[in-house]
Length: 197
Image (cartoon, rainbow, N blue to C red; front, top):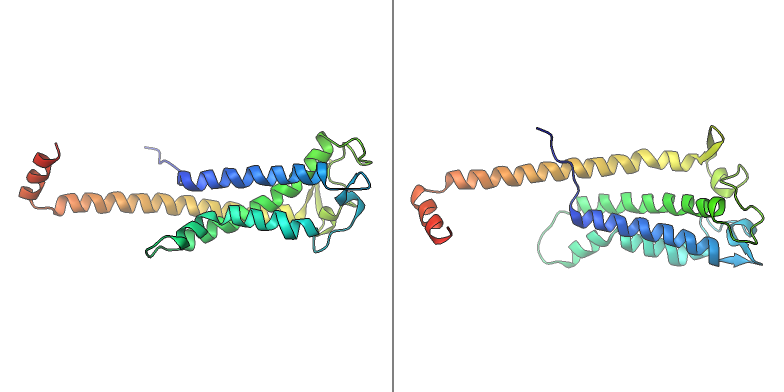
């Protein structure tokens, strides 16, 4: 019998929201943040690492809030809850959104460039800042920045551990429910069945 592999629907919806906004922010950045009608990234160097001022002030904080929404929600609820899962999920989502936003920006340049872009229809070039951050790997003419490759195993490992942990928690819940049923005295079970047929 095959086991069902899943994350909770709440986490999946959060991940889809994060992916949507990462791509939407890349679209806005490429099409509307311009310097002398040229996409800003092609006209000015980044402020810190591969991040620009608008990334630090707007896009990154928004992606942080979306990514860590399950954690924020759980902290605001009453009661004691373990925060390990939502923290791990938030880290994985935030890293995913950063990689995805950067890659989507170059996808828009390569596939749907603005008319004034002098580098229209070009994927990541060796001279682009994202390729210079840690270097890049060339797979049959398709350049992938090494920082994408470095973060990918960490992101995948976190998501896999969350899926395994979710399945373990579901099994433990099912087992504890079965134990409660078998530990209940026979007359209690009969009364329960009569009250709730």
